[in-house]
Length: 519
Image 1 (tube, rainbow, N blue to C red):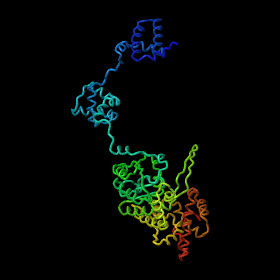
Image 2: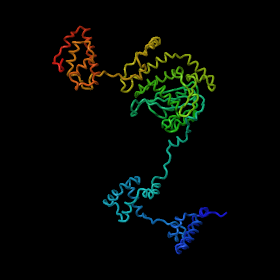
Image 3: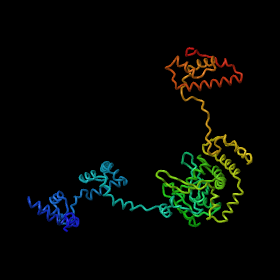
Image 4: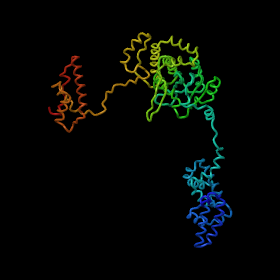
């Protein structure tokens, strides 16, 4: 079976097509009429070109291209002199990008010529000023690579970050107790500027055991020392740490510490907080709940914060059950989640078969010596101390700390009457407002209204308002009824106090100005 012209044309190389085009084009242009049509049909069949495209190809002056085997090139517009002038102006402009250089180029050239720094030929100057930003980038590409030293090398922190294994949310599976997520909680109030305290928080993935420590500054050596202190008070061994990309965590100090003590160090992906979902949940449910959102600065608040963390760790880990996700399935747009029965971190450790007998015995001994009510009393006392040290806080006075647990237990039955019991979350006390924010619409007619009230003390504010509108309907509107009701209520309360304390009702109700509204 004979192949079609299209398939034959595709099998021809570029060089073969150029040579064939050069030979056929000469014969095609020398022919006329019927001969041209036959040559065109044959050429289109062999090359696979469309008939109209074949006509354009054969009418081109391609004989020289076919002979040399090279493509036609545009004549070079910007020669070496123009490139040299461009480099000089680019350096004088402090190596800015081509798009910015294009805008300032006329000013730079004129200024440099005016001060005698360069003298450009008229043609070179014209070509330089008409050059596009893309052409500038192309001519400066090789020069930029030499001047910048090539590709920027990765910094030390980038090398450290790349050497630490990335662990995502789905990579945890079912780890043994001892793998902790670590993060900072800033106690900066409403502004992150300046120096403020931080809480270094660690949460065990398997059990939810949470530890926290107060830190005056975020410093890598201090982080390693704090981790060492937390390890010393843990009832089970620490096996690994998972951190975010904070420079206080991604550094040689912490990396060397983990290597020396056999800890596995991993990190989350940048800008993916869900990779550390466990620690993020504890930051709000434990740390923020205990400490609040105020600003803490200095050594005094740091000591109070450390005291609060020391007491809260026992209360949270031994007496605060939490949920743990069992499974999650998606049905269309609905996500169904199932949880294990709520349990405390200590209970989960006691139920785990990957915790040693010695650790479980230590947990039972500590639990037997703890009093949850006493721990809660100490937490409230530490929160009150911390609240009084907040920067610019001026919160309401904290409740009196009861040194006797029995008194504290008795106060729990009525604690709900005081609203928020955590001093760190109590709202700031606000003074009562004694000024008006709007013009009183009844100021001028109030003497008349007061006389009406003296004559008819049982009259309602609505009846009084209807009497006012009957005489001046254009002056008062229905939206002012609530204002009059408040004014009448204040007047009646004042009259009651005067009657109780023996004041004369008639003397207080005297009218010193003539009524503005007819009675």
